[in-house]
Image 1 (cartoon, helix red, strand yellow):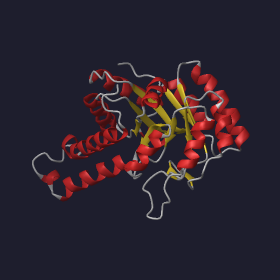
Image 2 (cartoon, rainbow, N blue to C red):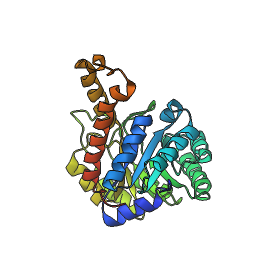
Image 3 (cartoon, rainbow, N blue to C red):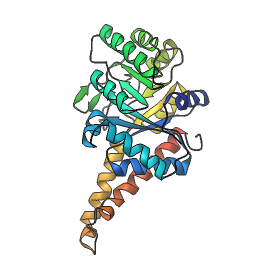
Image 4 (cartoon, one colour):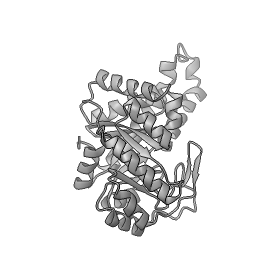
Amino acid sequence: MAVVSAKEMLLKAHKEGYGVAQININNLEWIKAVLTTVEELKSPVILGVSEGAAKYMGGYKNVMAMVRTLDEHYNVSVPVAVHLDHGTYEGAYKALEAGFTSIMFDGSHYPFEENLAKTKEIVKACHAKGVSVEAEVGSIGGEEDGVIGAGEIADPKECAAIAATGVDMFAAGIGNIHGTYPPNWKGLDFEVLAEVQRVTGGVPLVLHGGTGIPEEMVKKAISLGVSKINVNTELQLAFAAATRKYIEEGKDRQGKGFDPRKLLNPGYEAIKQTIREKLEMFGSVNKA
């Protein structure tokens, strides 16, 4: 199936009460792991690409070339979107030009009126090309490519104004953070989440920082309008642990165990297993 906008898959998820995973990709292994797993489970998926990851993988155009080629190679039949994650104003236009099918413009660090004006502009440019747009109000906690947020709670009035720009999905800070959650984390603010869904007129909502949020919280968030859940750190930890185990057991010194295809395979399989668990949790299996 051709790589598509995230709009339709999220509207379907919102209507039917499940979540679509945004799996951030970091290299060839990640792309292969996501595409083969979602095809096995017949689940739609959004491939998240941070600006740092795009730079690491050779630029936006190379990311799109890799995804499109692998999507065709594996004969993927499920909807796949390629989404710029936490894009800057400049990055949003570069990704759009390179063929990304979905763009997140993160203007949460700007004064609100500037965030609003830039979001309007980017929505117009993206929609002219059939590309979906995500906006954000209230910074998400933790660190994402050097951008640090303290887990703010979004202002519903600001959310309503940004949603009125015509964005296709909306991220609001509700106490969630990027990375691993600390022991003293207070949990998600479901009252604010419910209010944000009300004032945004039913726009599919996005839950950033999906790593470490308890399953019952994730499912409650989905029931309140969250249709996209972002996962990244958990996959990186699974990949690192499996790779470490392989080396600590000395398998890289057995035969041709040093071959990158063998060395990276345990991590690759660990990514696939974690993705399976997330898709089951979010309820997107067999929803393509």
